[in-house]
Length: 79
Image (cartoon, rainbow, N blue to C red):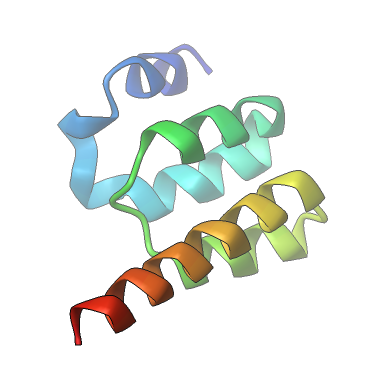
């Protein structure tokens, strides 16, 4: 858990491992996952949704669907 806390303080240091971090937070520190999702941006949103749905982390799942929708809208505006 202390390693995860260090990652949460500076998520930009570990961009290659964001999706793995989502899984680890969901398994070992779900109470800290939403904070991580808000700070980090390099994780695969769809994979994070699947992880959160499997763990029944509803607040996190709703947050991710909201972020996914915002990304979709921004992409459409660029077209």
